[in-house]
Image (cartoon, rainbow, N blue to C red; front, side):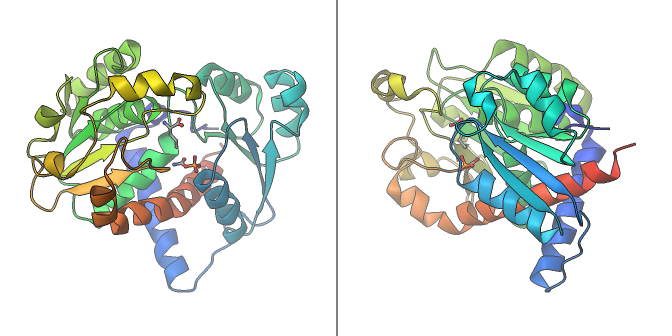
Amino acid sequence: MKHFLTLNDFNKNEILEMIDLAFEIKNDLKNGKRKHELSGQTLGMIFEKSSTRTRVSFETGMYQLGGHALFLSSKDIQLGRGEPMKDTARVISRMVDMVMIRTFSQSSLEEFASFSKVPVINGLTDAYHPVQLMADYMTMIEHGKDKNPIVAYVGDGNNMTHSWLLLAAKLGFELRVATPKGYEVDSDILQKALTLATQSNATIIITNDPKEAVKGADVVTTDTWISMGQEDEKEQRVKDFDGFIVDDALMAEAAKEALFLHCLPAYRGYEVSEEVFEAHADEIFSEAENRLHAQKGIMVWLDTHRG
Ligand code: CP
Ligand code: NVA
């Protein structure tokens, strides 16, 4: 049985298999065909943080696959009152067929998975957001940006950045990351990505200069400067991220017709300007829609690899 906890749980072929499956499922849906691959199954969705896209895409995706999804907010279940993760895992995984968790630490997610009888999917932790990257990669393919692309990430060295590092390192493309000083990516995760990159021929460049990162890039991406759980740091972060907004001047450094991706929610005037956001709204909202298709691909793939 496989869990989907980070992109490092899979090799390149497996990642591409899930992406292919996602495209097949997306095409079927667009052609009015709904195959009920997960007929009669239940997905438990545990949320310890807020969500719009992750909740709606998993719940709708599971329904479209013939299954059912349970929204379990930690505010409402006993987990929020101190029931241990490992007990929650042993209870829920005896009743449902798959679990998605959005939580704080990657180690809580791993603990849940180690006690779970069913596949567990990472719906975002402080360290990673791997399901988002599957949707992002689908969007790159749809825009013809998957052949040796140069991707530039500008902003906070956070869960999104870490997932980009692993995607680039697994698939073998060039990723440039520009963060302000003091907001660099986690050094262990970077090391892991650099090691993987030697096998995949990926290039990973780390800088504190947004222009250097974006120069000639085929894809430019960013994320909020203030992730969930960091609300108290807002004032300081806004000061420290001065100069890191993706605006027209920065996009002018990128390749012609560069794609701009944002996992959303976006905060205009902070990590991205209103002009850049609206000029790229089509691709950004396709990226959001691809969450639905990507995660259906992931769930069907995990279901067929239960062993
Ligand atoms: N991008 C993303 O995961 O959005 P939500 O927080 O709304 O789920
Ligand atoms: N880095 C952001 C991503 C939101 C989808 C956060 O963790 O809040």
